[in-house]
Length: 102
Image 1 (cartoon, rainbow, N blue to C red):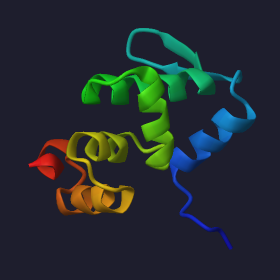
Image 2: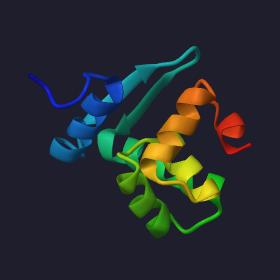
Image 3: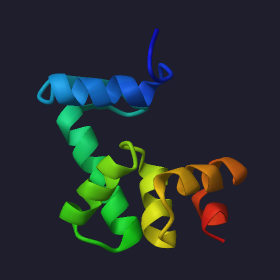
């Protein structure tokens, strides 16, 4: 039995930990996009940093403290809420960050 639900986010986290240099290939409308699992995690950290107006180092810590969930990290940083409070706010707001912060 698993300790957590099987979500794409959890699969990606595991892949980034075990295979950070492994390439991900995505077909877009016009072209093929290539990145690695490590780049995807780095992109998520940069999104948290930009949304919260903090350094990427601080965003990396918040991202990890939020269980590597971008929305939870942003709500935690912008509102000062704990991880559990931020998750509850997001649930109540149907996953919308703006509503979770109001």
